[in-house]
Image (cartoon, rainbow, N blue to C red):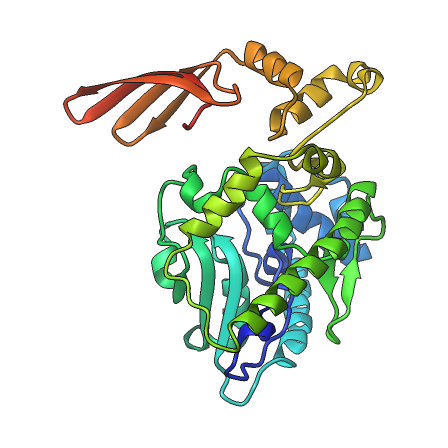
Length: 354
């Protein structure tokens, strides 16, 4: 789509810069998170039989996993250096003579992809272009531009839409989960492709064809002129309109799509809607109730069930405290606010965050 609109002959390429690749190449991971420490330890024990024999069973706590990583760092570090050499050989194939690199991504907090690419090309050569950046202590250390201004309001629907997972689905690619990259650029896919991924891949091929056709229509209409949009709020409002007013066909088609947004890409949850049979629900009610809670498009019965089982919730932001009754209702039915000094206290009935 970018190549459809650009008129400056910029060299473009789709590259892999996965968070997991950053972790195994740079050993840049959160040491207090079990999913990250165990994934790093598991990867290197799979690469080295000797290390696997020494480590044995992967522990069940982040502290134990990190202790083993530290203990066997002399063996792990050369393996990480080889992983980086492999990735560097892959990425260098895309470098042009001037060496300047711009990377395009959706939303970032930790800049993991930019860190990884800067590690190859050098910090001064790389600039990131994002939909939005969530401010952090690290954000000032990187060169970037964002379509929407950095904001602390990560719940703000004018920036992140009513369901950011859906935006990630629009940004995805029709291929299985990638586990590693070989020096020649070959993607190493997950050995077993879950049924959820197969459905997503099949659906996304149709979706991407429609996106490209839309882009080509726009390019013809505007005759090669630059198409400039000063603010992204209208695009968010457009997506939110779709999320707020689905058709029966939308609900039916999207019920088959599940999305794995966890860092290990292992837990698949409903993207927008979920329609279990009664037998399926009663087989594991706790699991499927969690699925229903995650569903954006609930049936009236599902909405009632979730509201009754989650009667109260609170939201606290600097200077504001709101107590919600029936926070998982389909909409907010009313809100009463009281200013006390510099703080705002509120009570609301209905959907949390509105």
